[in-house]
Amino acid sequence: MSKKNESTSLSNLAPAKGSRKTRKRKGLGESSGLGKTAGRGYKGQRARTSGNVRAGFEGGQMPLSRRLPKVGFKSRRKLTGVNLYAVVKTSQLEKLGLSEISMQALKDARLVSGKGTKVKILFSGEVSKKFTVEAHAVSASAKEAIEKKGGEVKLLA
Image (cartoon, one colour):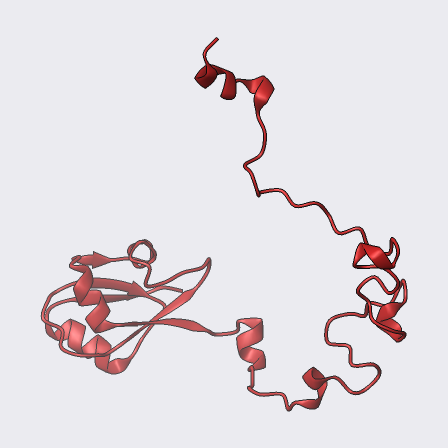
């Protein structure tokens, strides 16, 4: 067998040189380099066997996360999902380039996401194309602009 084949055989596999380190042998006497306190320092809670504490614990002092003021507000209506609409603008509808825009078309275009989401069409920019739209709600100005170009608005229940 040649030297090249011998080094690549399965019986001679070994990790790359320098990729494996020997583990630190803590607490095996002073001469080991990590003897006596074994890298834990002197005394104190963390020097003990079960001395670790949970993240954010400050030794009984009121933690920073509880000392800082709470910021923001979340409406109960938003949390429960009552009468929420996904807003779609008329300028976005125009960019789709479709003559009939259904709920499925809005989901495919990623303008609406989620199951059972209600859609409201709002007026934004000019409406230059004729199209039919299905939505749960439409603003008066959006409805007027769509119907002005000969389009139609179908309200869903």
